[in-house]
Structure formats: structure tokens, C-alpha cells
Image 1 (cartoon, each protein chain N blue to C red):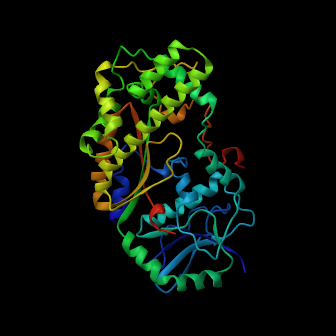
Image 2 (image 1 turned 90 degrees about the vertical axis):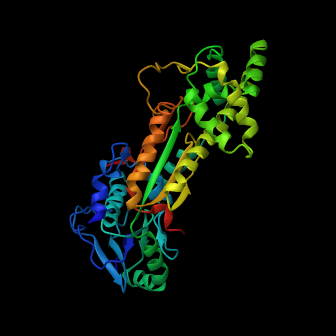
Image 3 (image 1 turned 45 degrees about the vertical axis):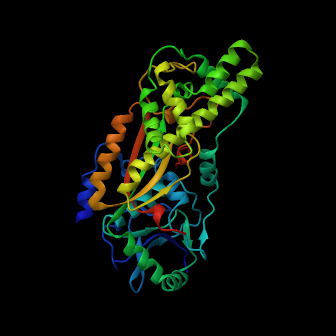
Length: 239
Length: 154
């Protein structure tokens, strides 16, 4: 019995619009179907033997979930989840029915919005240069031009830049969190001041978007603010 | 249905993944979403590397020298181009004056009047060709976030 690639779980029996979508693994259309266990339904396609996660596969996954999200609540699977066979899938759907139904109920009418904020590095550095500690380090490096002193200066600046990036993110989060029913911060790391997922009722979508637009106008060009969505609620299905 | 209405009302600042930009949702697709424990999650060699790659922040001597060089190029007596950022961050300090950020931030707001000049050309590249977001032009000594498996398309 063939393995099944699982896209997501919904609470409608027959979601529309899946017949024309390409499946993960390459089938251009017609491979996507449903497996229902009472009130919960998994959307699946035959799992390719050599799934490698090419761009088109990731896109196929995302497009199916977008189509599902347009029709109602969906629990999006992480990319690459494969059920060994249909009986195993049915068994786990039955075991988890209550949990899935509760989650679907909670997420009904809500979408995920992702907000990424990337402060301009030059402005961060310019702002960091206002810190007394940085001023002191600059003065010290000007008196003593050794590479060691420059590295020390760079460390002080990097720390100040990091603090500012973090403050910027905290401030943005404070502004946006009240407009969402749930918030989940994603891996910050690298250059983001903020990289967060917001669960927002569709009725509040315009309000949230306007708030982001206002912040964007206020902070341009010091901070690049990107709003992505509406998305299936990837960040709010727990694990 | 209401869902469709919301989709079509998407404002211009919003990027829909449908427009082909996987970049902004990649980490969600790969790191978030539901997982069923008993299932096999396909091992995606290139993908796992990709997500790790995106999170590395190099803290090296080169990075520090880059910061030192950038700050040395500032004219500390001129210009207030970091004002937007300073004010935004400073606003936090006023709201949260009892918070732990107070010390650091009051230092900033006090020094704003000194003014600083926005850096130009901290790399050898010409930086005046528009205000591209920082992540599209990371300094050469930092890892670039690769796009999803584009090289591999086939």
C-alpha cells in the first residue's frame, strides 16, 4: 500500500479546488485526494519515493494549504510529513480526532500573518554610536589604532547594535500584539529585529494590516517591515 | 465566502506567498506546522542545511572589524539620520521606564542631540543606489540566506 504525503487536516469532507493543483512530488494535477475519519479529513497525495524538497514541492505544499485555508479552518502539516499507508493515517486521525477538532474550532475564522522587521544596519550603527560605551570605545580606538583595539571597538558596537535591534523588536511586538488573538515569535537570529507570527481573526485583518502600514511609514527607511499573509496557521497548531 | 474577500483585499505591503516568494514562508513550512509523531518525516538533506544556514550569525574578527570600520566612518558631530530609529526605540523607554531597558535607553535619548551621520558606503559597494532592505545586501562577511533549492530545480 502506498505511502501518503499529508498536507493538512480539515473538518469539511470534500474541499474544493484541489483537482487542478500540482502535488508534492511532481504530479501536475489530479493526485490530491482526501482521507476522512468521521469529522476530520486529511488531504493527501501519493508520496513520491524520492522526495527531496525542491522549490516546486514546497510551493505545491503551500498552494494546497492556501486553497484549503480559503475554504475554512485547516491544520497545516509541516513540509515532509508522510504517512506509511492509509490505515495508519486513518488510525491516527481517529486517535487524535478530539484534539484536531478542538484545534480546528479554535482556529476557525483566523489567519496567520507573519511580520518581519529588518532594521537598516547603517542606521543601527549610527544609533549605537550614541551610546556612551560606544563613544568611549571610539575614542580609545582613535588613540590606539591597533587591530586589537579595533576588534574591541567592533565588539562594543556589535553589542550595542544587537541591543537596539532587540529594543526595536520589542517595541514592534508591543504595538502589534494587542491586535492579535495569539502571537508566536519565530527564530530571531541574524538580521531580524522581529520575526513573529500573529493569529488574527479575518474580521481584524484590515486593522492589523493598517497598523503594520502605519509602523512601516513611521519607520521607513530605518526599518524594513514586511507583512506576509494571510497564511495557514502554521505557527499555531502546536506540537 | 468571507475568506475569499479577505484574500482579495490584501493591501500592497502584504506579500502573498502565491506570488512566488517562498522565501518569506520557508521557515514556516519547514519548522512549523503539525507533525504526527508516528510518521516518518522525510529527510530532506538540502533543506535542513538551508534552514541552519539561515540562522548562523557569524561573530568573527572580520565581523567586528566591519562594525569598527563602519562606526569609524561616522561623523559624530553631524546629522541626525538615525533619529527615526532612536525615537522609536526611545519611545519604548518612556513607556517602560520601570523596565530593565531604562539605563541603556536613557543614554541613547540623551545623546540624540549630539547627532550622528548615517553611514554611507560602509562596504566598498556603492550604497547610494536606493534603500534596499538590509537583508538583500548583507555585508560580504556574513552568510547569505540561500533561496530554496533553486539551483536544484529540474
